[in-house]
Image (cartoon, rainbow, N blue to C red):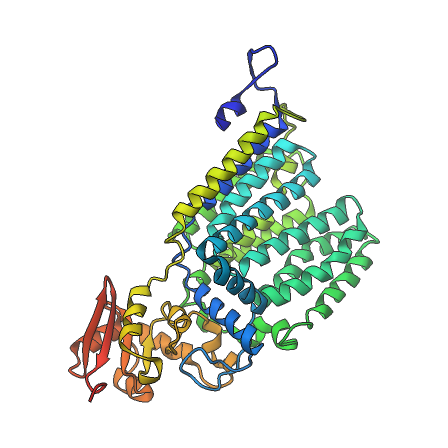
Length: 486
């Protein structure tokens, strides 16, 4: 029905006419496309949510802790870099369960649509172009739609871009005074990517400098204020400089989202296709000179994406929104209004999306290791066992009350961050089968192992007479030491 109205519209005399103008209410129906797509997003494979929920519970009960109490390791220095996000997710999940998490994600889809639209309309003053930009950008951003702190980061980057584009294009200097507030929210909701705000501000700063725009002084003052308010967080300077104090190059080769973007991967193919499309678009519209800030955003986000897969989202945020402002003038006009019955269509589509999502979401937020966790809960208490787990399994096991060897909080297990031992590097050796398994097991006195079938450590356990298989769920296996019950 919606596609039909984009090709034809029905006039007052009842005649079908080729599309020369679109009633705005019909055009805005297309906003339901990315919202509906959100109903199909599968975020069950993201295991970070479980340690986030556990963190949220701990923060509400004990405040912000500085020593890790989730894993089996003692006295590891800790900085919770997304503290208030954990509290928000814990509150939502505790009161509204999976449905609450899903509706929260859908809220962000709507917010992304809104700010993409506002930014594009600011540049183009064209509703059709702005709707196209916002829908396409949001759909691609939904590839990164997971219950993680990045939700807030993407939103705050969009807000920052909108404020800066308004500041540059319309000289709306009052809006930039909200940037320190954005900085304060970002550092407390996702401190690890707080620096990304400044990365996206830099192209605007450079263009103002090149043009010798007198407003550069105001922007520099705001940037200084943004930096200073960053220290207003539970961990002060440690969160401000978190990427430099916590991350290590050893993460890059062992975590998939931190690997360089190559064309052999699915996401890499999409990235290079989009990049080629954008380049061809600008070549086709070469009569319009590309603004310095937009060129720098394009180059900068390309470089970031090439460094690792996770930064693909930044490419979408920084490279998509300016495109339509460089295209030729549209001959399709958008007029105000439309049938009042379209309001009923809006309500109907909202109800359909909500009812469908309720039906779909009963199984959306389920850990891959849930059945194994249920087995552990039935047979063992945490105090009775010493548990080895794979990287992806640890967060859920911590959520249900166990203290495993490792979890998805990768930086916590780096010596640079925990000030004690490089456990992540040790785990990498286990993962790659380059460690002495006898010494490794003896070091921690493991009684139980939960691992993937045919992993290096599983092959060792299978051949060893000191361990026996007690549980199997598809490709996840639990082993128990034969000395455990003796």
